[in-house]
Structures are given as C-alpha cells and as structure tokens.
Amino acid sequence: MKTVDNIRFILVGTTHPGNIGAAARAMKTMGLSNLHLVSPKIYPSAEATARASGADDVLARAVVHDDLDSALVGCQQVYGMSARLRHLPVPVVNPRQAVARIQQTEDTAQIAIVFGREHSGLSNQELDRCHHLVNIPANPEYSSLNLAAAVQVIAYELKMSFDPTIEVGRIGERRDAIDANDLEHLYKHFEQSLITIGFLDPEQPKNLMRRLRRLFNRAELDRNELQILHGILRAAETIRINE
Ligand code: SAH
Image (tube, rainbow, N blue to C red; front, side, top):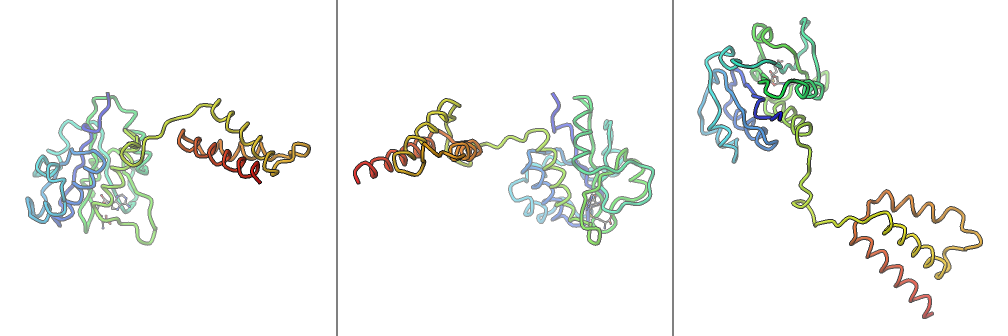
C-alpha cells in the first residue's frame, strides 16, 4: 500500500528555527512526519520547539544532513518547491498535479519534496536536482508564501489525496441513515397533512410535492430529522382538526 511515510519533506538552509517548528506542526496536523533538514542555520532550538507546539515528536525524529545529496539518498522522485518561476527546462506543476503524480508512482517509491530558504529559495544547483518544480498558484504580485505555509499547502493536498475522511463522530452527533422508503413515507405524510391544513389543493396540486421532494432530497435527512418533520406534520394536523 502507498503510504505518506515514503514522502519526505526536506527543508534546505532554513534561517529561522521558528519556521522549522511551524513546518513540523503543519506536517503533523495532516498526519505527516518524515522531516529532513539540510544545514539549518540554527538547530536544534527552543524557538523551533515552541513553534512546533505539540509536534515536537516530528522535530525529534527530523534527520539533519550536511547537504542536499545526503537528504536525497534513495529518493526516486524529487519535487522542488519554487515561488519564482525561472526559465528552467523542468516541468512546473501545481500542488494538486504533483500529488496526482505521486499517487501514480509505485507503492514503495521514496519521494522528496524540497523547500528553499526564506530569503533566496533554492539555488540553481539545487533546482537542478529536482525532477519537477511545484509552484503554488498565488497572487502574481506577492507570490512568496511563508515557508511553513507552503509546507501546509502541500501537506493538505497529500492528506486530501491519501486519506480525505472526516471523522464525523468526532465533530458532531451520530447520524442514523434513512432509506428511500422512509423518504417516500415522509412525502405521503406531507401530502396528507398539507391537504388537511388546507395548504395543498388536491384539485390543483401544481408542482408543490415535486418541489418539496427536491428540497428534502437535497437535504440528506437523517432519522432524527425525519422524526422531527413527522412530528411537526402531526402537530399541524392536530391543530387544524381541533380548530
Ligand atoms: N524569496 C524566495 C521565496 C522563499 S519562501 C524566492 O523568491 O524564491 C521559502 C520557500 O517556500 C521557497 O523556497 C519554496 O520552497 C516555498 N514557497 C513559498 N512560496 C511558494 C509558492 N508560491 N510556490 C511554491 N513554493 C513556495
């Protein structure tokens, strides 16, 4: 099985240790942890740990190298992140295209994604080592993202491609599904109730029921919501009957 563990994020010559911490955090939020650092200016550093803010395990496992060559050992594909598009004979793709390409490689392939320095990006020599350049489409007049922000964009695209599931249980209540027959029963109930309360004229129904079907089909009702609607209809009928 293809796994994000085979994708290493390589930060080259990072000046601000805070950015290394923020990058580790960006990775961990998206379930990534394979971080490599090529001659960081100041590292390890309390500022990196502070900015990692709970992702210090990713920092602790980060591998530090003296040069890019050593960080790239074993990597079949190398993607270079570049804010500026120089005239280079290398294909340029956006993050989504890059991730689609990564998905197509064999499962065991090691992939490198290389990020440059805050002030000067990647050198021409380093860019020469990259098989593809990745550019995050941005404001043409202000296209350079903060290093950790660029890491976050790629990490998010990888997450969306490798494991886009939302843990519904954690962000909301449990939703019990209903089926097509439950909906049919609801529409029958609607029709009868709307006739009872005088909202629907059976002689001239127009498209009312069809429109209500369209509305509720779009809403993807769960069982709880279905019961609420039945309850409202029953209450409306009772009021009308008792009038
Ligand atoms: N001033 C530098 C940009 C440095 S930003 C330059 O012009 O090259 C630090 C790193 O973040 C860059 O080297 C690149 O790896 C990444 N990055 C920032 N913005 C990006 C963008 N729009 N597309 C791709 N990578 C970007």
